[in-house]
Image 1 (cartoon, rainbow, N blue to C red):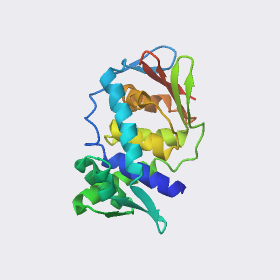
Image 2 (cartoon, rainbow, N blue to C red):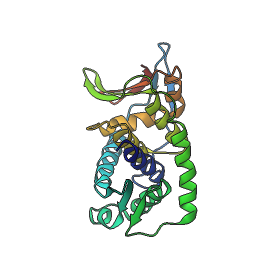
Image 3 (spheres, one colour):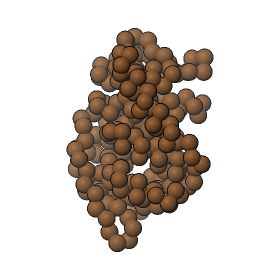
Length: 222
């Protein structure tokens, strides 16, 4: 079960970089003297994009089942659920590249090979021993996402490979097992940026990602 969850999340995350929602703009990073990194205040459009990504990943999950110990993506079901055809194609490529099977859509061999290389990079980032916690909660100041060192590395690796809000939603909601997360937190991770997130996670104890009620995201080490 853990392997199939990882495969779905990783395959989806690297496959939907270009197409599940509109591309996210470049995110600036700032630092303060307290050792936390802040992203810019999120716009309503960025928060909505995060919410949409979380919802679409949830819809796609119902079209992916386990058959004989490996993932199977039913593209016809995904299309019937209203998924965008380009998204279905991208997820199909990701599932096949990760060792699963697909029905209802043809996949391109070159795209599979390229995605398989990206998957290998994400998997390599997940092999270390995990320190810290992974959970999601609501605090007095807003939302808080904690990622242990392994999950933080997966998110940073995916972002470095070009993952946008949809890819991060796939990893954070599926691979880490975090449920019920606010879409704004996903957008907040992008606003912080891969470089700053890596700085917050540099001591190997995991990372904390906070999002204030006003929509300002920041990260710190656990």
